[in-house]
Length: 73
Image (cartoon, rainbow, N blue to C red; front, side, top):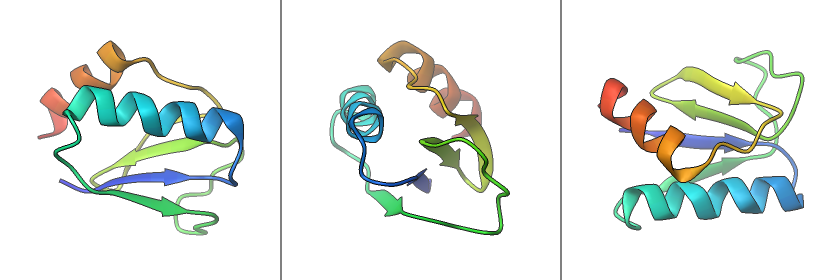
């Protein structure tokens, strides 16, 4: 499973990364990308799991992230 967080180093990006780590119990590598033209992201931070855009411009909580991981794993 590949998880990417796209966006600049902002407080929302840091919160999203912390929530991902909590949801996965730190058992997964997270790729941090400042800009990726393949996804056409307009609002950051954006969460991409297995090349599917899950959210953009929103900080998902731990429970929401777990649901997406279960579905896409």
